[in-house]
Length: 102
Image 1 (cartoon, helix red, strand yellow):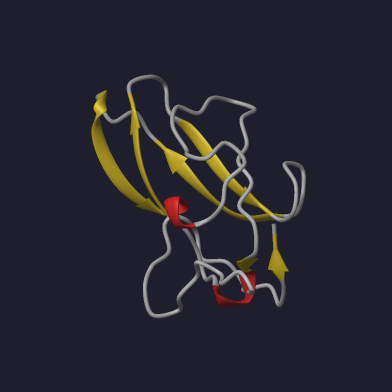
Image 2 (tube, one colour):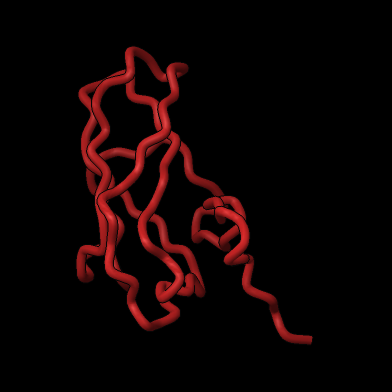
């Protein structure tokens, strides 16, 4: 039996739908990374993240293949006023890549 990709072009995929090395995304800090397997980059035009920041904020980068791979998109996270104050942010648009990538 083949494993079906969790990506469905008719709905917005979420991190929880893709296999991730750590199993989930939680608190992230400078230098942290997560890897999602078999993401069809040709169908991706950008990223949306739901974040909170009780600290100084930062930037989330989406890179191809590895933590120092080609930068696909990024999202600037400003302080939200607390770890329980969530906002949804969109990355800059990206040019789709004709590949399926981890």
